[in-house]
Length: 211
Length: 428
Image 1 (cartoon, helix red, strand yellow):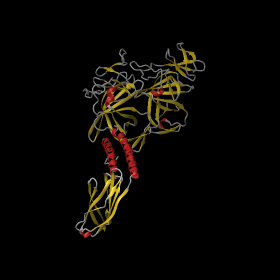
Image 2: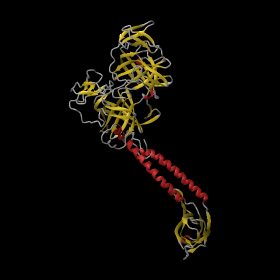
Image 3: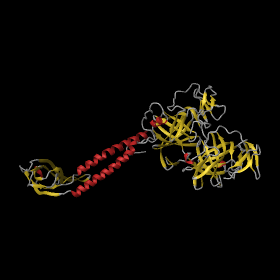
Image 4: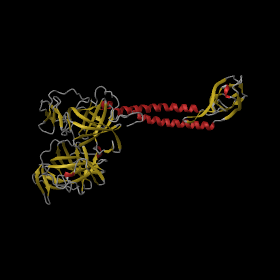
């Protein structure tokens, strides 16, 4: 794990990067959103206070996915009509990065994969079937989401978004896929639905009255 | 909740009646219902916009698990945070059931449903169920279509991580593989699947420390496991084992039986003779107490002979009386050739002690039938088939009884479905 140190250009607090490929982070002291350039850090904005959140996961939570240890380094919080969900950016032991999503306590781990051509959004409907990685997926949800906030380290710049559309797909064996239409080109994430207990999460957030 | 720890709730008040609101699911609530006036509020809105207001309190539904109750359920602490009553109508009759939303901040949500004292523990599925004709396959198990109906929410209390208002209607389809039920709910174009497992009210009462005892379950529920079904398998397995044992014993006794001919003689009988009764010469029945077979072969074609026998123990003077009729008929009628009866008759007398015996024979027939010749053969130690058949029947009876009860249980289950069973063996 690389720990490159720099100073926050806004408040001068030391900034540690836990993951060498991080592009963006937030200053834990002054909440500035910082983008890593070749030489230093550039302040591009400030995160608003994240709303009262319910996810038991937090920055620094660690766990295991398919025998690979991971640590949570950052997150993106989205709102949609029926609530909100978190995409936790996790670093795996061999330097890879993945996403642990917590949507109403339904957990999934996904990895960005290259697959082309991906369908354009207008061509995707509920129930449509696609095959990736020899697995057949069916579209189970198309969600209009609003970007709500970020925290910690992310593998890309992500701070000036408004809305994005996500397409969730599932297989008959519990595989999970998301098509992310927040940029001009769609991005595919493939992975699996995971059971909370199977993740063996440590350093979880404490809830008063609950253990 | 541990004493001293302040409850993790936000302090909010109902914008309709001003009553304090308790929020238990920490930012996951999308809908919250005021305890006092039952207004349904939008929990995502900081102003708690009123989604639905009720003039008269619709407080006639009391959750059996009071909201805020905690229990250890499926290995984790869960708190009851939401309650809704949903109804459907079949053939003009309304049915309603109750759903209790349970919450754990780490494990998330699951819910308990109750109908007529039958409970299910439900959670959202992870994999995608796959349609297979009228059935659905989920993670390798096949679920049979039970019922499709429109479920309408008639009462809500507490909080929910999704939008819910009274009069919400969704198409619900249940597929069963007892003790599991797979349900799809279609609202608009989106389908949500949940998997339920049948649980006993008593277990819920114990887990949540509820007062009194769980209401008695009435009738047979769609995914209620048939207790008899498992025992039917066992009892048929036991029957197969015991029947095999009986067969083996029968075969061994057949092999070991002496089958020793003790007496054989040929006679002829003239029905017109006045005194037909006679006794045979003595013969010896050897060995231990065992069976004796008396076989009569008579030259009867479209005739009959009736024989009154007595096997007489010469030493003890004891007589074993029995009567046999030998008759054989054949002919041709409009349906073709027919035949009835046999020229041979066998009878087995069980448990005859060894000793010296003779037979007294008294034949009878119709005087018009002419002279009838016949052979009498006495065989010592033959296997008694009837006893074995009786044993098999005695073993068969409980197995058939259990199977019948299993059948009745399934018939009761499916009578409430879209596919009632028609008749025995008709199935679905």
